[in-house]
Length: 156
Length: 181
Image 1 (tube, rainbow over the protein chains, first blue to last red):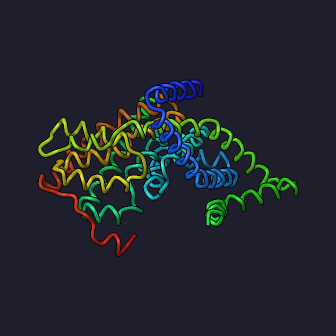
Image 2: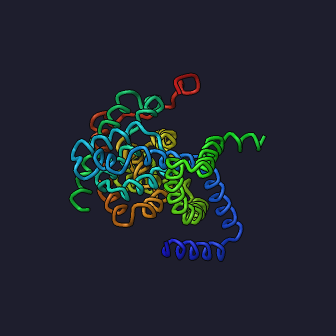
Image 3: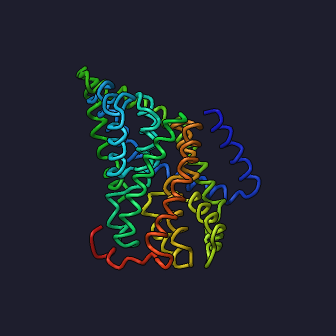
């Protein structure tokens, strides 16, 4: 938290010193992005709050926790594959999961499939890349997520 | 017009607010617990998200993406790889936002390998996202995940080029306006 405040102040001061106009545009852009994101972020927080009430910590841990083993990792990978959540929301969500005892490796797999694999957006991807390339890229990325997860499991 | 949009954007939030406030009046236990959860997450988020977005905004105006795109020309091998990764790290947004850029890269002569490395980097290496990740998941987690992801998507790029051939080109989709999505 302190690092963030510190970094922001330094960057802001540097930017102001070099170009006042650009700094203004940048800050405005950042604030606009935040305002645009706010409604969906609040909805997700509300949903997560309800979800975590309905699914008690014990069940979540059973589903994705350290003892869920490989099944937990696969569940996380599949959830990431079908979900369409922007990163701005995925990271807070992942943070909440880690806080509730989901292992970092499982969270890493979830984030990776979320970012790299997209079943919902496959039609768009096929439009650009063709069926063969799009399907192959998603399959490889799905497999890659597990490799990343295994490495995270070893080092964290 | 603006008020209408505001109501549309915040419609579910307002329903949630009514539910939570109603719960606290009626001493409805589940509703109150849901609010306790919500408050905890909200306070955590609101304490540093605005700062983060200031940084992202500044980042956006100071880093010129167009200059980088120029470097991904014909026959750029390893240097091309470096530039596409750099280009990808500076962007934000969902993966499908990267598809049009991949098309432009391919049209400018980037190899299939570099195009797919670009997509990989776009999905797991974006600097604005990394700030987010560090904020919520910690420095160690973020750095390790990035380090492990880098070789994985470079290998995916290499496999894709082998699989599709060197002459593979990303195309401009014609059917996207009409159908499907």
